[in-house]
Every structure is written in C-alpha cells, then in structure tokens.
Length: 193
Length: 193
Image (cartoon, rainbow over all chains, first blue to last red; front, top):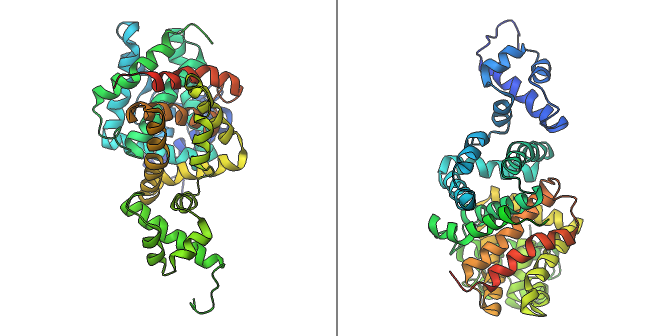
C-alpha cells in the first residue's frame, strides 16, 4: 500500500497504530510501553497517536477492545461508602455484562485469551495495571484478595452470561448482588493475606 | 466410507457414537438423552455404546472431553468432615488445573464454550447434571450458592492458569486454599438464599 496516499485520519493509520500497540503492550507490558515507542513502531508522529486516542490508557483500551473505560468505572465504584464497595462493584460488573453489545466484546476477549498468547498477555497487562493496581492502591487491599474478588465476578459472568446455567442465568441482578456482594466486601475488608 | 468394512472396535465407530452423543446431549440435555437414542443416532447397537464407554455418564464425559471423572472427584471431595469441604474442593480443583495435560483440556473447553453454542450447551448440561446436581443433593446446598462457589473457583483458574496474573499465578496451592477456601465453605454452610 502506498504510504504517500494516506491521510492522518485514515482508518489504515489508526489500525497500524493499534497493531503496533498490541505488539508492544503484549511483548513489553503496559508500564514499559510509551506512546513514543508505539508511534515509532507504527512509523507515525507521536502527536498522531495522541490525536487518535488521547492517553496511553486509551490506546491500551482501544488495542484490547475492552468495552469499558476502567478509570471511569473504578471511580464510580469507589465513589461512596467503603462498606458498600462490594455491592457497587457487583452492580457495575453486572451492568456491563448485561448490555448485549458489551457482553459480545467481553466474550470475544475471553475467546482470544484462551486462544492466543498475545491476547492473554495484553489482557494480563490490562487487569494488572488498569484494574488491580488502581483498585488495590485506592482501597489499600492486598493484590491477592482483590484477585480473588475479581475471580469471583469473572466466574459468575462465565456461568450466568456465557454458559447460561440455571438458576443463575435467570436470577435478577439484585439476587446476584445478595449472593456475591458479601464475598466481594469480605475480600476488600479482610486484613489477612 | 463403506459400512461393511468397519469393526466394532474401530476408531470410526467410536467417533460416530461420540458425534451422535454430542449432538443429542447439546440438543436435548443430559437427562433426556439415553444410551439407546445415542446408539440409534449413530446407527449402532446400544450394547456397543456400553462396550466402548460403560455408563451414560461416561459417554457424556467422553463427548465433552472433560479431563476428570466427576463422580469420582465429587466422592473424594465429600469424603471427610463437612466443615472442610471448602478446603478439599479447592485442593482438588487446583490439583486438576495444576496438571499440564488436564489444564490444556480445560482451556480447550473454555475456548469451545466461548466459540460454539453446542459446546456451551454440552458444558452447561455437564455442570448442571454431573456437578451442581450431585453436590447440591449430597450436601443439601441451594443451587445458587453452589454456583457462586464454583464460579469463584473458575475465576481463580482463569486468572491463575490461563491469564497467569501475578501474584496469583505464583502463589502456592496452600496460599490459594487459604485465600478462597473460607469463601467456598461459607457458600456451603450458609443457610440463606
């Protein structure tokens, strides 16, 4: 494809930036990947990466095609009494999975991470840096306990939305909150580990 | 392929039985599928199905390619004080995932259920009938709580073995038992829901 014919706003350039970002994030990890390195790998000016995506975080989310903005979502979950973080986290999580379009993206991610090591590396970075790091810093919860909490949510999503096993598939969001909210809260509160 | 040339012990016949079993289990469910119906669909004698696989349960496990025998595994988990079922369940689960060959099969199942509706239906049947039904009957635990417990384990497996996120990926089995064993036990003990 001729380089001269492209415009800064073309889909091809955007896709090339995302491809470079996926390769670098998967190979080096989130922290060691800069916008400058992504721009260099895609052979574009760093300003163009900013123009398309904004921050490194946003390049990362676009590269991974995650249907949520973790910064925003986590801010919502943290906004309110600490004693209700468990409940808010479950509700937010169910809200995301309950939306058919977002659910399709999440199932696609689940499929990718079980099929492709690069996708697994990307998603590992995403969860470590953008999710676990932020929440565990904000709430001062040991990383292992936070992972147990998120694992509880992932397993519920797998059975409720992907496998659609009853009675969990037909339970209301309120019932699921009552079922696993206390577990999540316990992992957040517990001082051990 | 000429039917006359086949022997009862041939791979082809075994594969045809499994293919028929997959179709029927996925379409009708575990309970409504008989060995006789599988034999009829595969155009073989029911005795041949018994010869290859034994019980309906064993046809089912072979059709799904699950690397565990649920009856045996559950019997082991239930064998001992009820107050330690949580711990035994976590240990048994980690033991299965810790084995590289079994892990590969489990990841393959996870990939199938996110890709293919028939595989999802089969696995749904497997979990409902062979896992949740048995444990919830044996321990008299409400189905929804049992699903939360199994969801906790599945999410841990996803992060520890598939995504390999730290510090969970490098934690010892004992640490994981200490982390999630009490959660599992609570779901088994709790009288609510």
